[in-house]
Image (cartoon, rainbow, N blue to C red; front, side):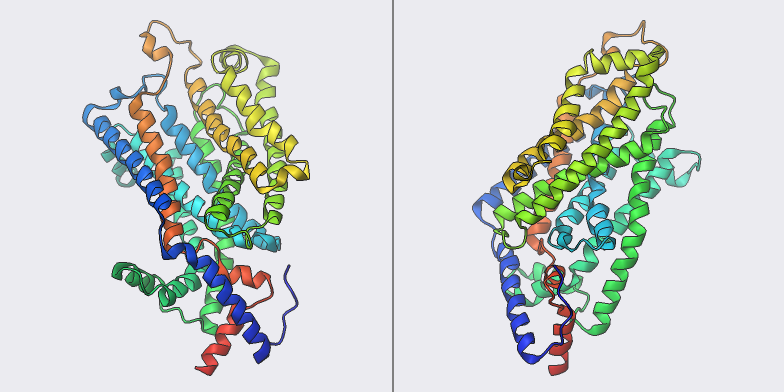
Length: 460
């Protein structure tokens, strides 16, 4: 909890400086050297990424015929992956902005984990859209011949703006940490030392620098909340404004936002556990953080449950035409196993289990969060594929391959590469920069680094 602001006497300054140095050592220790397991992990992700690049080369060379996509199932797991990445990207705004304005100070040690997940997710969301295009050069047409009536153009604008804002929200609070790396990690390769010097923007901790940074962060937090909501609303419009059974719904905007909050929070819980164990950050990412995140996950699961009931119960009550065929496919047909598993393991059971405090311990809550993330991806697949295979006009007199969809190895390799790409961005970032915000964490303990830096600059 935050303490009362105290007058910074020399004795108190000395005590706080020692605490800052202790945290610096703890947070920078993982950056000093990459162990063998770390190198193997990075190599594994790079190999998956290279296999995906080769698969995409084949797709460019031979066309989309190498995938399982056909005239009816035109999107498949590519767009499912896109919606999933957009979903997890919302978590940066959830943790960094919403909790800042509600004065929940416990969030501070986990903000950077949430922000890098958001940036990595939205980066690959944009790339996977290009992969889905059979002719990627036609992406230029969105800029040379834009049509304001097109929801695709809206999505490009919103995603680009959200990416820019998310990068700034990650970068600005990182400035003091980059300066610490610049001043401390002097044994690193020349390119890395130059990078720290360049990215630090001459940070010395002056009163004016602290004031500008904190003011800029507040402005970004205000801007990014409506942007985060809009990116998921506009993404839902790509579906809802298409005349398809299951997509023709005014519920889709809040339905997408609620699901994104749930998936993103589960991703942060997993990230918290991994960094806590691998980097030995138990003093900073504590059981209290997991307890609070577990409560948040329960709340979000209940909200998402409400929108799921609203999304499916209304058409189920009428059971007419193409909607009836779609719901039969989901509830008792070929997609029933995936559908009920997603509802049970991705939403209902996590909400029930996490009501109990003993289930909100680090290891247990992480085991619960993993299926939430997995079935969040499955849920996006169910939003895309079954609906495309159940158009208003029944599929007839077409080749068998058009009536069903199963991804080819090319699609699986590319989607796996995109998932590896997200993890690679997070891994490399955590190997170059502090994964915990030192100044925000210490500020939560009542230690104002702004005052310490001011005192040091006055002495200098």
